Amino acid sequence: MKTSFDLKNTHQENRLFFGRCFALIIFVLVLFFFLIARLAYLQIETHEKYADLAQNNRVKLSVINPVRGLIFDTHGQVLAENYPSFSLELIPEQIEDLDKTIQQLRAILPVSDDEIQVFHKRRRLQKRFSSTPLRNRLNETEVAIFSAKRHLFAGVDIQARPLRRYTFPELTSHVVGYVGAINQKELKIIDPVNYRGTRHIGKTGIERSYEQQLHGNVGYQQTENTSHGRTVNVISYAPPISGSNLTLNIDINLQRVAYDALGAYTGAIAAIDTKTGAVRALISKPGFNSNLFARGINQTSYDALRKSPKRPLFNRFLRGQYPPGSTLKPFLGLAGLEKTVISPHQQTFCPGYYQLPKQEHKYRDWKKGGHGSTTLHKAIVQSCDVYFYTLAHELKIDRMHQFLNLFGFGQKTGVDLLGERSGLLPSREWKKRSRNTAWYPGETLIAGIGQGFNLTTPLQLAQATAVLANKGTAYTPSLVAKINSVLVNPKQNTPVSLNTEKNWDIIIDAMYDVVNSPRGTARKISEDAAFKMAGKTGTAQVFSIKQDEKYDENTVVEHLKDHALFIAFAPVDKPQLAIAVIVENGGHGGSVAAPIARAMFDQYIK
Image 1 (cartoon, rainbow, N blue to C red):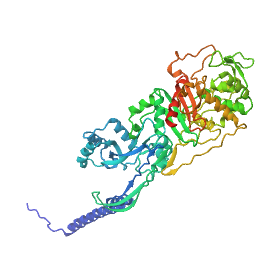
Image 2: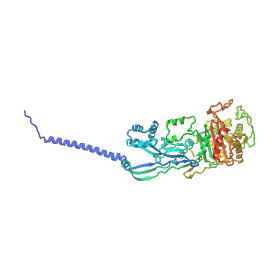
Image 3: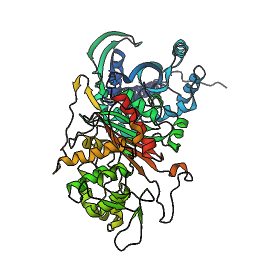
Image 4: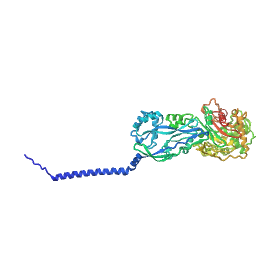
């Protein structure tokens, strides 16, 4: 059977051809549409991103961090300086697998778990394109090891950055303070432009209080680079402005003598130049190694400091609030003279206790048998409690508050350090406002010997002593003497004016005999002294003793023993230095605190 085929079907072939052409045109149009859409996306939506990338391939804007200012003592001894250091830094945006990269780095360099933990904490506070340090203070060998394998680690590089170093880290840990990594709270308040590239900020002490002066202003450099990052031309340059150098009033030699004189005791010391208010020494012991914080302290070391029962991180001279004890008696005696409640030769009999009218409770004197007939002079020299119970009862609490306030008790001194506390100078109004209760006569008696609600800081006590030594002339305590070469002038406060000027001499003569008379409570420190001192010892109870109990320091546990206090100034005729010493749980002001002041006077007065 024969089959025939139609070999030429023009109509069918045309339909097939045009169909294929139409499909091809549609396909081309779709491709063209996608091409136009992609171009639109690149040119409109992501134009800025790729323009920046293209520009960065050619032009690079670099931040130039300012050099932090140095800190010196009054003799020019360096207290805080900068030293060059190499750090291993990562840019997360340029790293595909961050954890893998870190593990590969650990294979060639020692990187601890603590350092990794700190790294992740820091990078969360920064943009992904920011460089974040993984390890600081690389030595030359470690720099060489990484440099040889740098090509294997995209987004990782070594940066040279200055680190802060304190030459007397424990001795000045609270007064100079330290710098540390900028935290999230600080990021919200600092100038993001001026701190771009800065990793540390002042945390405590002078470093914090004068952060603006020490930091300086950031600079910029715009360079033209090759595609490989090599700089071929500097387009523009704005140099950074280095931070100001600070010269403090602190005498580091006096600071060392005071710190060493405290020995194993915990306590605080403040020493002020009576002629200007310049702070010559500020001690809070124990201190700590401030370089640990500047380098980046690990959690173990920080926990050890934070949990220590001696509280080395607590600034005692600025924030410690202690009962002034008997160191308040000269000021209270001056109030009695000024208010004509007492006269210099008026006598009060001390049987060893005091009783309020129609009350059986006995307010005891430190001397069980009493002091007998006592004048103001004798009461200060021998620290008679009964005399001041009687005086306080006559003055009443509100007049005591009004007069003691003139010397700065119950208020901040205004020293150029942040974080100062004001202490507490009680009054009827204060108790009603804060505790909603009435004031009782017995509380006035206790306040008359510097106990009860009375609280003072060591710096506050030193300032009051300086005002007394100056016979009313008062200055704001100051730590910074010069900013670069510009002197910081002393700030004089409102003077304390008396109705009877000779009252100053009555109190100062009594304080002189505290140190120089055979019955004075600090008589031992006057031996072989080349100058004359005036002072007042004090003892502050840590806990209350019941009426029928007796305080026995031999049976009391260490942390419940009385605090030992001493205030003093010298030389008596032309005062140069006023000192306040507080030794926690030291027991006796005359035997423990007073010798510390004597050692400081020996160092300062030459």
